[in-house]
Image 1 (cartoon, rainbow, N blue to C red):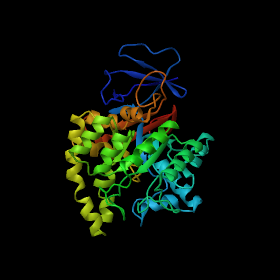
Image 2: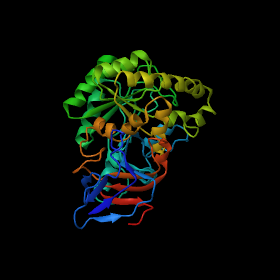
Image 3: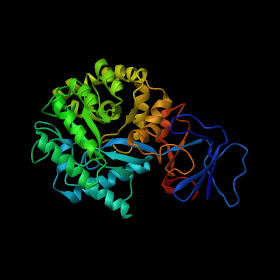
Image 4: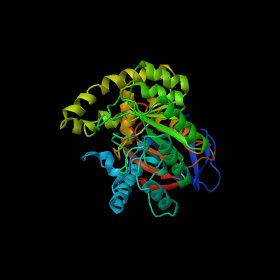
Length: 393
């Protein structure tokens, strides 16, 4: 049993626990939180931690592509490459980077040829290190989409239902429907609806009937309200949400999973925008749209989550980006920890409480004062196992 006594602890709602609170770690679980002045149990072994550090739940990344390198031609089509060995090695590299950056759980939003299921199997067998994976299989995308499958788009109710049934049979917990074009993609525009509202309703109902949750990828336009009204569990990206779209998400209880770093960091889509006037024109609208939508979403009580997309190893920067867009720091931290777990329907992680998974992150500094502290990682524990630490074992 290890006793961790950091200078401060932050819970999964972004709030600070009382000073001098200590955490007992036993096996894969949090054994107890000791209030200030409480004597630790006999046999608890103190772990020396550096001064000035903060302990918080491990980060939960809600939107990722594992085999996709971000700045290559047609990046989304990499998820369908037939070179499984190369894709597996790329995914393993990205997963390792993500885990070392503090991400202990990760939802995968698109992999062809069953790669995400194969990676999950490797994890269960102890042969692959990385965040615990929540998988969705290959995206369900229409003809003309930047995420269309090599065999063609899924346009008919029967084709979409077959893909949903395949996802359920494979053991995925989610499916993803691509309902608009992308900012950094050819074909459909980012506010152009890919599916009719009736088809979205039918698809969501079919997935829910099989016990699957539904993520809908849409940047803006009428597809957002259609997805929310169809009962989608999450809306992905939302780079161009307007007031009506935000209100529709709020009215239907759909969580919004933002991927701000991919749009706003200079090593994200701005690289492609520098080469393509079309991408530059679409991207030019994003910053102002997101800066207006985030405060409105908060005022309307939307549940917010975060995803790194295909930008690996710096998920903590997405938290800082959400703060820059107008979210309180505690809300942004929750979007990457406790609220993220709630959005996934996972009650065993995301907060610091006895009996929960010991998925923990130790960072240098106080994220409530400076969100970039999340990028100064001093230790990561996943299921109680130290996977990275600069402190004595």
